[in-house]
Image (cartoon, rainbow, N blue to C red):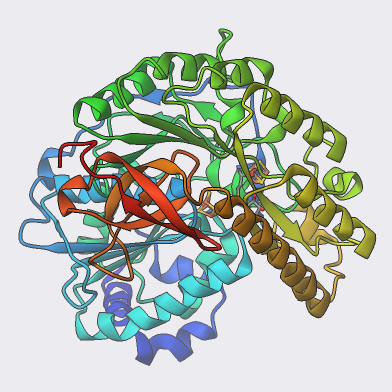
Length: 516
Ligand code: SAH
Ligand code: SF4
Ligand code: F3S
């Protein structure tokens, strides 16, 4: 880059508004060629789809480079997280990296020296929210040109998103992908000193990077990744492209992490993966989620959950281990997506309505009290009224106690996005409304059954609405609000349920049973 280009680049960074019109006239390649030559490794969804037969590399050698130690001294960071638990946990890792560099956290955008948006690409409205937020950050960047704004997470894995940021939001300082999180220190340094937009998004299948620092949110519940990526390629879903191939962490690394959390006093861990039932399929030895849970249940930690299960890989060994109970909780989130076998076929879910019902029967036989919850998409291309009715009947037949329900959103690069999105929005909305009414009804009925019972609640803290009230979750993931001394926060305590609501329970603390 010559001096003239460097001056122009600086001008773009420091006076985004003045340059916007000029930038708009150029296409992305021109922009990149001219201004953004520092680190420019853009995403490629096609490449991200490849699944080669190659061993997963596991790296244990993470360390903050000498020359970067302390670069965050006296500075603050803010991370905004969108999307799933995986992203929540990635943000904890990024917070860990920034803390290692000397940065302190802040909640105020105006105080921050680094702002990261950890984004989600699952549906269009998720993306729109992020673009809205990027827009809000522009005046803050104008006020404070030294502020570093970074976009990361699943959206950064999409070409269209990177191009849009390059063209419309040139004040963003860096974009990095889900496979580049461990490179945050280097990328940050580059963004700080080069003044050019840094783009580093690897569209590869992915490695496993162990030993990254983490600053966890809270000291009661913890996320633990057991695997990364997804190879299911459901026809509507962007995740296999944004997160790479299925790759499992070694059992010993997971066991050590959970042991360590138990020793630190954590009360609950949630094992994370996009498809946790495929855990271990990439090993050369026979070992699955059932085997892992059978080892983890022996660790002295009161509660172990896992998410998300895919019905296709939910095997008998897992059911047998779950039936042992103890700290393995009997709540299973088992996304079904649709009650119609034909819709499931075109979604490439690889099971039928009957297969799903058979799996539910087996789970219930082994765990009679299990709570089942699910995810459902309405308005998939060509979904008929009859097919939607099959989703309604399945909802009832299984007796799901809660469901996350979504209107289908076409995702560029996925097979379904090439099909006509032919269900009118009013019909999609009407289906969603009817489904939600049923979900509410079933949730309410399941809550009602708890009235008068005493349940164990892991107390997480003050309720969001009223600081005099504490709240926490039961083993089967029901939210309970009740009054008790603050000293019970972080403990599992008995609460008598006095009133059931649609999505939560009110109760009374059963005193004298625990030391408070
Ligand atoms: N790995 C999990 C869920 C991942 S995404 C699983 O397989 O179940 C969470 C939920 O978002 C999915 O279960 C699905 O219901 C929904 N979802 C995914 N892609 C979507 C899309 N394109 N439009 C609408 N909902 C979608
Ligand atoms: Fe997406 Fe399907 Fe993978 Fe879940 S299993 S992340 S819905 S492709
Ligand atoms: Fe969203 Fe990526 Fe999670 S697309 S749901 S943040 S894996």
